[in-house]
Image (cartoon, rainbow, N blue to C red; front, top):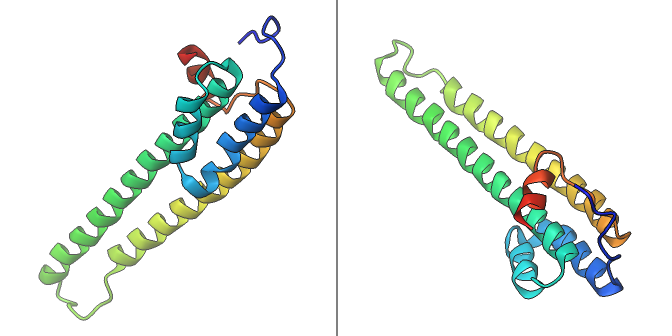
Length: 142
């Protein structure tokens, strides 16, 4: 990424880029998408809103995968519980699946909070800061 030859962002652009990052905590993908669609003429805002939007898509995919694994654990536990001699035993697969899903969800939310705040501050300072792994993709989409 070479942002040295780009003009410095205006105060409005920095504020919208900050909003794209910070408001994704509350509105998930909706706010970055709206900001991306409204302010397409600014490369700075487009870059930061695209990063936030890609991050929200990654979070949704990870959450859906977690739910699929949770339901797999639950259905496998139900199917093996009927064949098991200890039918009154608690369903360990269900509890392990639920604990794994809950842990994954909490880690994702904390990571979302940290990334949103850190990169929101960087965007407000006028930096072309990239999310790890996602920033290069957002830069190519400009």
